[in-house]
Image (cartoon, rainbow, N blue to C red; front, side, top):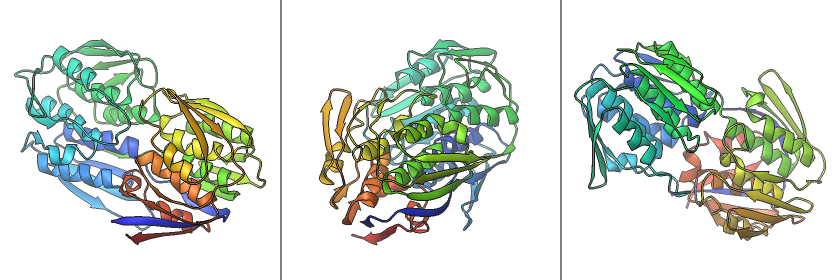
Length: 424
């Protein structure tokens, strides 16, 4: 098993090309199963989650070609002329929660599915009740047994008018895929507004779906009989971009992030500027400069987009743990997303938990430590802490990191970080 070793204390200087978005890639890949025609997806990140999904899609009948490029401009070509298998096994679905969404194309195109209950990072319960409710309202017969969802329908999906208690990104993705092939007009209220939702909707529209309102609270979809193939590009990963921006704010230095949509991380960059980092943008390039050791404390509360993303909470906590004063970080999305706190404490961070809030007392500096990643985004917070710490740190269980960051050690090394991946 691999680990990452980091000798901290070096500022980051240089350029980093931001990869395609993990959170957009997965639903867009699954959406390619909705058509018999060829779908090309450019700018796909080379992640373990992507490779797992490729394996799952192939098992269902998809013919997939994954062209990898040294400049990170990877491409996937997918053609699914027929659904040859309707079972998404536990062995694959347990590794990545998003793979549960294959239920949508299996039901919409083939009328039946057997899909394992999902897995993924242990950051919260994330119940599937909303998914099952959508399926039932659309006329799908369901049975849950032996850890699987058995689903079937004998006709086209019925349209539905649905309101979410919470603007779930996953449920909104699922709704878009299901309703695109439904027999009539479907409406979802209190929909998620994340850029990844907009990217999926725009892809489906290019495939022939009739969708309006994406990016707002209410999305309306008029179902069509069939979808066609398309060619689209995966948008940049705003979480990766935010992670590197936070890293420079913690270590000092100056980097330029290429291939970014600065508008998607406005809230974060505004907070970083308030904390003492200099930030400017030029088109799809974001420039981050930290030339002093002052990190002003900030209070944040995670929320659905355009609020502060839960996927950057752990990274921001690592920065605030080096702040000049007390910060509070309130987690409103996932109830278990503070597992990185005890690992940050090994670097010398002073963090107390009170229900859904972390109270962070900034320290002058971190000391090196051996630590263990507990989930995908927590692993990034440990990278930031290790880059800032004096001495050599080691991070184990980095398979979490490989789920969402494409060649992070190479990108950091190109900016002067002393970082190596090794066998444990």
